[in-house]
Amino acid sequence: MNLGISALRYVEEVKNGSFTIEEFISKTVEQIKKHDGKLHAYLSFDDHVIEQARNLDRKIANKEKIGSCFGMPISIKDNICVKGGKTTCASKMLENFVAPYDATVVLKLKSEDVIIIGKTNLDEFAMGISTEFSAYGTSHNPWNTDYVPGGSSGGSAVSVSAFECIASLGSDTGGSVRNPASFCSVVGFKPTYGLISRYGLISYANSIEQIGPLTRTVEDTAFFLNIISGFDPNDDTTIDNKNEDYLSNIDAGVEGKKIGIIKEMVGQGTDKEVVSATNNAIKKFEELGAKIEEISLDMIDYSVASYYTITSTEAGSNLARYDNLRYGYDFPLEGYEFNSYISKARKNFGPEVTRRMILGGFVPSAGYAGKYFLKALKVKKKLTDEINEAFKKIDFLIAPTVPVLPFKIGEKIDDPVALFLLDFNTVIANLTGKPAISVPFEISNGLPIGIQLIANSMQDKPLLQAAYALQNTVKLPEVPI
Amino acid sequence: MVSKEEIENVAKLMRIELDDHIVHVDRVQKMIEYFDILDKASVESEEFDVQEKSITKLREDKYIPYDEKLIEALKNYKENYVRAPKMV
Image (cartoon, rainbow over all chains, first blue to last red; front, side):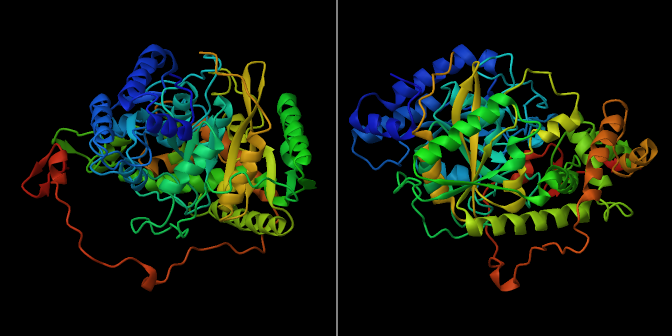
């Protein structure tokens, strides 16, 4: 039995009776026991997965109706609520928080009979790009365990890459699905803003974050998007996508499509291996009949500063709810002085979250809002106008997902600006609400490189078609675990 | 450049105690220094989007019962009341 199969293949094999759900789940649990001590993809597990698998096998034997996922093992980032289990956001603040309800995405997946193996590691409250800011320890990249897996959905990417599940859900605020997907050689997708409900995702920066799947193949992403996308009355920002089928015609190809290279994303600050991989991807697209042109966006140099200004501001507001009454630590009922009570509660935030809280208090404050926050909003608007203008002439934008190769654990953690700049290629999709995908494309000296494609709003389906075309031009080696 | 005192003052207003200045204040200062790049962006004449939603498009204001007693998940409660720590 091959644990590395795609979701679509898994469904076929279960239908054919090649293996039972229980067999596959048991083998997945064995794989986790063997490797997760070192990789640390998971923060918690569901202890009843074998029981769930047996129940589903029984349903199949009795020819009862079963959901389209056929007991497929998946993992969920630990900032998405799964009822009855811990949702910690990799923070000490929520160490004992048990979610009282399922996120909409979780409910939709459960209704299609997935088996949720466990909850995956992240940077605390999804603030980071390497999982090094998790309060429960760093995840390790299965391609080389001395290296970071990317972040913030690092645990999700590791779990898919290391065959510890078939697919995962992460959240992407500035690249948090695409970045670890690129670093771990899996597919990572951030949909159009509003396409997937965020009800049950613990808020960090509402105006730009989205939930997105991490999968082995582009078809699998389309398969999951069919299940989890669409309007949700519990999330007012969601869009009615008219039950679009993202999987049909996925092999439509890119002939005659116009693809723009964002020239600022393959220039200074980009590793030469990454530039070379991007050029190779562009050549592949040309061979497939796409037309390539270079484009430039004036606002791009300000996008990272705009992104961090806006997200810190929203984080400062969102994280104010951890006041130790409704969430957080329970203190004894002794007497407290008000200010010291709140600050005592806030001590449970880790260092990066604390810094973002301070930033989030500073950049929109009286006297500084005009210089930082309002300007960041204006950059966001102008960048959106520029990118909308670009999409009048082209179908997709192409760039490396991350400007650099995966780096060693500890290598960049002390340089906040270097960490900021790793988001350079990914934040524009979040700031402008566009869909974007990272496709595994090359392995350079044992380290993965992903290529990012961005499309116009609600062009998620054509984007997946282009990503599928690119994916099929390469055959990558298996992960060395 | 933003001074360390200004950052300390904001932290105080945010009710964040700073016990390690190198970990917090110095790094926040570097982050804000990076944000100064926004000064170079020619966006003075730009407007910015405000998300608007018509009140008629909001979901119905309807009570949806929730079967479980959420209050029981809290450590300190009495009947239907949350027991908050005493403030002095």
